[in-house]
Image 1 (cartoon, one colour):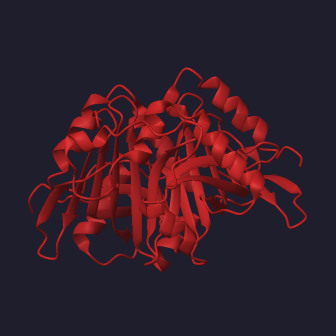
Image 2 (cartoon, each protein chain N blue to C red; image 1 turned 180 degrees about the vertical axis):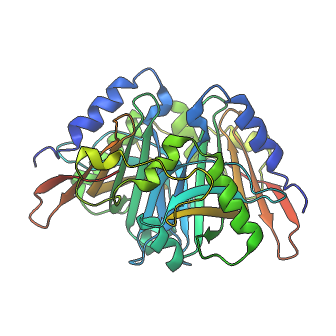
Length: 193
Length: 193
């Protein structure tokens, strides 16, 4: 694969915000079974090696799992506060759960689990999200095995096929639209903000 | 109307971030005609007087206008970086364009236009968003009349009927779900994060 043309701008923005941990958070929109949108903050876990696919982690017990099975398409909105830049990344969502057959991606699921902090891993052993609040002690389960993901741990990939990059700082603002065609080649065009 | 139970938490978060202008930005998810989600950063313009409805401004020439006509439901994801809180506000979207018949809401559209900065108003006179980049001089049109909105200026209202409030700082994290029933009464329940 070749590095997509938007990767260098995104890498620069991430680098310029390395002192703000929250700059690795972005908002992922999905669609519910009733056709209404859903939107939540998730954490950027890097790119899948040798691809332009963005790694996210999710819990199969969360509502987004069903939403993604129903409509495997998502749009990330990633706003960088200091450089005043927005990246909107739209593409297919690929859910790598415990039964996913591809051994390479299953390996990526395992290594993503291993790279998490103890605290992040522990949350997958917490009681069911969205259910009525459980007692305090249920939130202190035995720490899960750091080598082997819990069955409800999923690696979620977003494979961008359209990236809309807006720089609010320009005068006027700058905006580029990057599109991937079927032959996997990217094209870039400057558009009005 | 009565103030919804989530209003005080949201007001506190806004107040605690008054020194960060970007804390008034949030992400609005909508659904496209093809059933895929869309997501972008927009600016909080306050609440419509005497309601719990959130004010946003949009340009009828932007893609979200068609999306909202097709699926008048949206979800805001609003993350506050310092207090590490997230509000997800889901509800009906009401598009107040130049032909909207209700005189009170038309008045609100006018006053929202009047409250904008000169720069913000000027953007509604810029060339069509998303089209191939126009020449520089087209971005310096004569300033629009500050009293009367341009025809492509819309007030967009999101009328929340579900608010999911997450505090990441708790140990464990705290999360509340606020639901509005048909009689307009709100109920609140603590749920697992």
